Length: 165
Image (tube, rainbow, N blue to C red; front, side):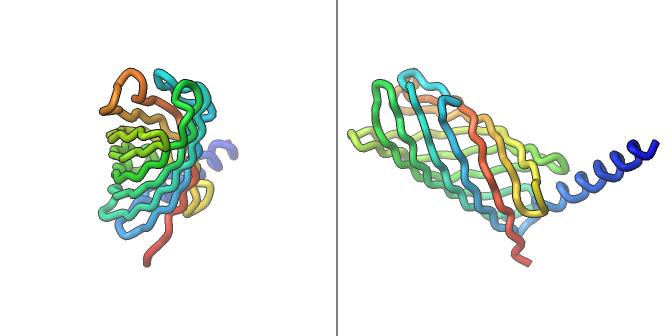
């Protein structure tokens, strides 16, 4: 009986704190590790990427994001890519799941340029009141050549939700 009461109190506490995390006026800083063969596209072998994001909660559960990323591609492409993008997230209230959309411009060292809109589904797991681990599944659609450059993958990120009060 005692374990059940403790579990119920913990669940209630997590539900209350998760609900309060995605409120208007917060600033978000995050970083993600992508690749390590956790994503697939038509021509890649090794793929390793780092991504940095900054965002602002302009309304409860809604965030605008800016991002910059670096990707190393192996396989036939053998190229280093840099990207800049904008996007947004909608947090499903009380559970930490978010839906994201974005669009980024990608530039590579051998003349590769592409515009890629994308979608993602992720989860913000709070380690503390402000720090999260954020696994996400994403899909980026290539306008250059769909079969070779469109990407589906998994990324693991860390986020910090800063209070602006």
